[in-house]
Image (cartoon, rainbow, N blue to C red):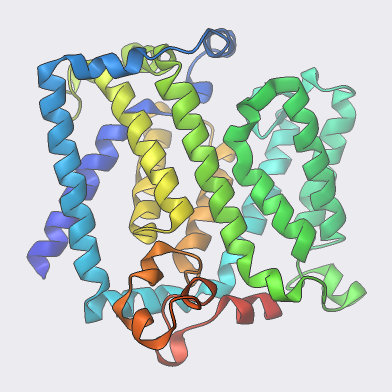
Length: 367
């Protein structure tokens, strides 16, 4: 078992470090360079990396490493240690929504203070009445943080998000993780550690659907990752290649291949796969850990702004501790197959280990 764990951690570190090279181009490149590059026609140049036989060999090694890692994780999850680890995480599931709530409130506050929306590349000055935008973002941040008229604050955030689409185009889809959380707050509110609880009392609408709030956030988060990977890294590869060259990443021969295009191609493919795994809930906790690891490495190495990443941490931590629902993981679980009919499995949590398991419905009731 120790060997399996060490092997899994080694592979995890290798994959995470290798593909952290891409960074978040919008936060690393100069503003004008990023947008001029993004407005260029789509290009399939990233796939030219596979024309090099050496790159194909490296790609095969990476693919085999991924399958080994997934296999080891599959075995671990079905061991007694794996089941205990997941049950331990789910004990803290009631903290999940609060991680997301706090991080989105802080992100909106820093967004207002930096005169931007969601990220530094979305300048607030491009909105009509930018000063009103700053005031609105600060108000939304405070209202979500203290839980005062949460649904109204979330609705205002959704309206601003829709406005941003008409200003910046479909690029704002890279921030669909924000939209997912705003939709959840608008539909289900926040009734724990909030003024709404004392002013309005419990929220009764959509009670039967509250258990799917994590699914909403998860799916939109996965779509955001895939959109960013395809649009920026695979269809505008010159942006990522510029980052690789500007930071001289290929000089780290023990970490990165000598071809910047392979780094770009690999980053786009892996980020897309991570997004798909999150959407379908396959090896989800391992996938979240990998994404957190390389996001953190990217922050440390490229010295990117922290606040645009805060919500990524909030959502990721929440997904780590929430009982799984509507995931492939629990559909193929041996324990779940024994206790649930096939048509009931998507609608019930994955692990139910003794008293430590907490259902999403129970969490939502107390939320």
